[in-house]
Length: 125
Image (cartoon, rainbow, N blue to C red; front, side, top):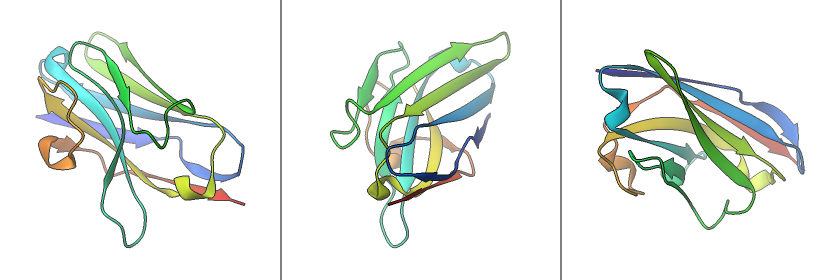
């Protein structure tokens, strides 16, 4: 079982920066890929960024160059950060953190087994 808790969302203006945090706890976290997805009202959950289980980052084209994903391993938890710069109104969504054991670049949310409850990011123009 992997538990995920997201934080860091809020209301910001276009061009601002926000850092989201996902704290993961559970067994054998080192074998899990981590991903950030987002879901806007009336839209499907879409891939934003991920780290393969070996630690390689990958991004959706829409955020490449603006968002940066990173990971910090502690003794019993893993923190995954999503630094979001130059935010745009179209980035407005609920952002979810997901975990995918031995994932190597999956972009489909169905491939991720565990999810947090999400954190809202709202970007005003």
